[in-house]
Length: 272
Image 1 (tube, helix red, strand yellow):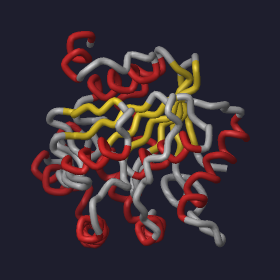
Image 2 (cartoon, helix red, strand yellow; image 1 turned 90 degrees about the horizontal axis):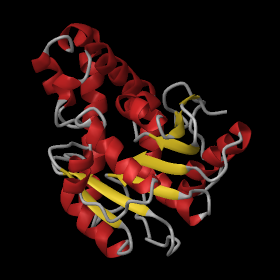
Image 3 (cartoon, rainbow, N blue to C red; image 1 turned 180 degrees about the horizontal axis):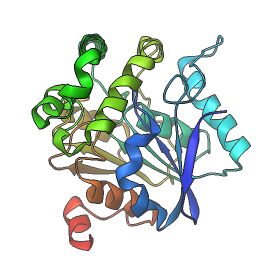
Image 4 (tube, helix red, strand yellow; image 1 turned 30 degrees about the vertical axis):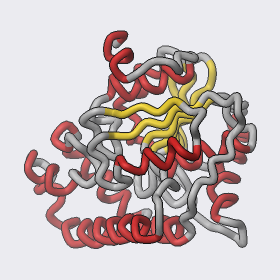
């Protein structure tokens, strides 16, 4: 079974992290979300404390979705609101197609690059991050104690890396290295999202204005493929924005789960 933790009470809310990350990526927003929902944070296969990622002859889509279906069945979770970041956002959208979600908030979702060149950039970026993390690992505890060190090591994913605590930054680096085989396997099976979601599904697509992994212009492809979704910008946020602006991210999620899908980012700021 996948590793997880939970908090709060109310309608279930499932949080799915991105590739190379771990469930603790959501910690900055959990307390706010737990005021309204029973929140489940899960480690994807091959990440965090979960078992290894294995395709076992399944398609890339099946290998991502089926472990979560099994987890939900074992944990007794029925049709949760689903929130994902990056790979987790792609998985969230896939779950909506299978009737597994009651709403989706997809933050910088994978699967909306325009061509092979753009996807090659993503592959090269993660290969570089893994290689650099391996080289820096012996000195990383010292390096990440300093704001300039966290800026050097984490600015590819975060727009405000100095807000990430040194111990969290080091644990994230170790997790990236420990999950590198899963990262490589998942990227090797990367695919475009086809946009086939239920017409009545509440969906929010949110993109950080400073995303350096899946560049913000990919939000244009998301608008074309998911014209019925609510599309919002996350000003000043990077690819993994939960620590960049926890209140904005929590408000964006809650606007979806509570049916306030006509709200803009400015509206969310006013209600925060």
